[in-house]
Amino acid sequence: MELIILGATFFGFLVLGVPVAFAIGLSAICTILYEGLPVAVIFQQMMSGMNIFSFLAIPFFVFSGELMLHGGVADKIVQLAKNLVGHIRGGLGMSNVVACTLFGGVSGSPVADVSAMGAVMIPMMKKEGFDTDYAVNVTTHASLVGALMPTSHNMIIYALAAGGKVSIGALIAAGLLPALVLMVCMLVAAYAVAVKRGYPAGKFPGWSEVFRSFAAALPGLLIVGIILAGILSGVFTATESAAVAVTYTILLTFFIYRTMTLQNFLRAAAKAVKTTGVVLLLIGVSTMFQYLMGLYEVADFAGDLMNKVSSQPWMIFLLINIILFLLGTFMDMAATILICTPIFLPIAMKAGMDPVQFGMLMLINCALGLNTPPVGTTQFVGCAIGGISVGAVMRTILPFYAALIAALMFVTYVPAFSLWLPRLLMGYKG
Image 1 (cartoon, rainbow, N blue to C red):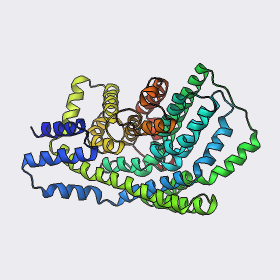
Image 2: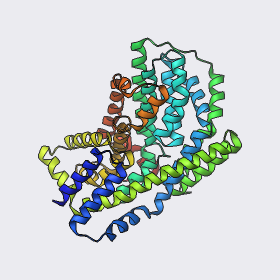
Image 3: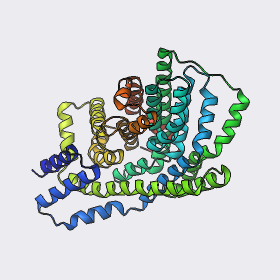
């Protein structure tokens, strides 16, 4: 009965339009009161969930991404991407994919990525004669690669939701190949749609211009290399790498590029504080939720249900993907990770999936949810920038969805995409 109350109140609050964090917390409170447990359990679980040293990486990574967003780094990355692939058919679309991938590497946030790249690329593509729905779809889907990059705070959230079963360093290394796969799939989709619609190709500016733009963008792109090199060499931990990222970004935007203003710095700081507060609230209330799910053995119950459908690992992985996708359509990325990891990670591990590989599966699924209504954060941002309705964008979204699902299937059924680099660079034994 307690499990019914937990699930029914949670989904009931969501249907009523209550924000996810409050829906999680209120459903946990209702269940605790019904169970007759002391109310102090609520606060104990919230504090234990938030009072973890590794969570210091979250505000630092968020702040670093906001500084990159407001510090003028995007323009240099866009110019490099245009010079690299702008001469291919549908060149601005291809440039958009590459630019979103590169900026996703330095921001670590799909929402920051679509905000920065969308503000530059969507108006530019519309001016050059590209359809608005194409410009928005390319930007919003390519920006999702930020969730897999070393600066992604969602990796930290997953590592801690996994209960210490996975190394943050291994996750950071594991995200690189899936990010590359996702970029390639998006390039194929963008090119296919460009050919179908007859979009023109641009002109190649010459290798000297490519090298010049690369030199201009390189200081910003180095943040990924600094984080990876520092963690892999043991110079600093994953948490310390986030502080290094902020320090480097401040030096870069103020003293190297000299594009940061005091007003933009304060705007970036305010946005980082707001985002961090939302994430930590989600972590706190989700810890209560996880406590109750452990108490009522939800993971075992879900595993038994899946085994009744099929005992084949490939089918279990497919079912997990479908469930995560459906949940991601109306839940925020952090909330989905915090709630679903304790349920589905044990099931996936029992079926033979490594926790690092499951982390990549989880991140791509949650990223897919960012582009799917009714939540669809990145899609709403892209549509607002493009001045187009979500319905108009959804009518032509299938090729880009197909690209994302193809990348997800590669990561789900080919473990090497997630595990090769951690094993090569870190000696990971998973």
